[in-house]
Length: 176
Image 1 (tube, rainbow, N blue to C red):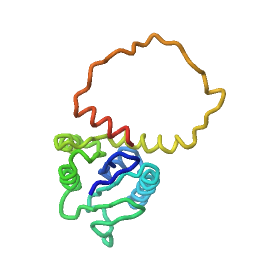
Image 2: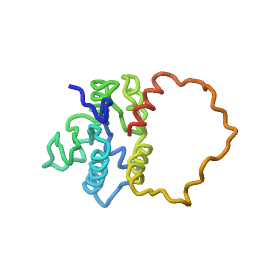
Image 3: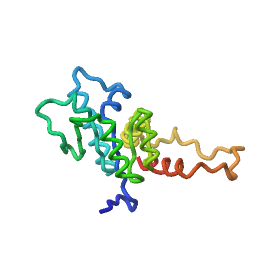
Image 4: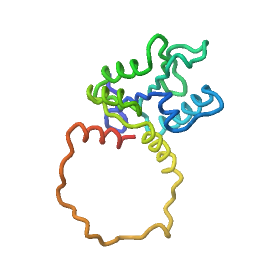
């Protein structure tokens, strides 16, 4: 089954949950509050963009009453119980292949996901993309901001073409 959003195949965003929380300094008084803050931000992002999102957390930090798999606010949540979250992320990236975009700043995960054809983005850059989505709605055009046409000497000829893997990675990141 293929999911389509705005005429293009939707991507599956696989997020290293605690890595994103720590890299973006979302640390709250407790881990549960930081997880909820992250899920709220991702749910709002999902409403805007429509991509499938899965967040994987290490099961060691999960509350005892928490299920291993859950779905809240339209976000799939997985707590790895008997294995590391890194292993679960790698397995999902291998299964999804080119449909996946892995969000992590862990170089081991990034290299593995890229070797399986998945696009990757750092946690910090992904957080900036989420913030940019919310800033787009607030930004208004005003006559003071409109400078019109500005002459330039910048060349517009052909450039060196990026490798195919990098071009695919950029295409998926642009969809964010």
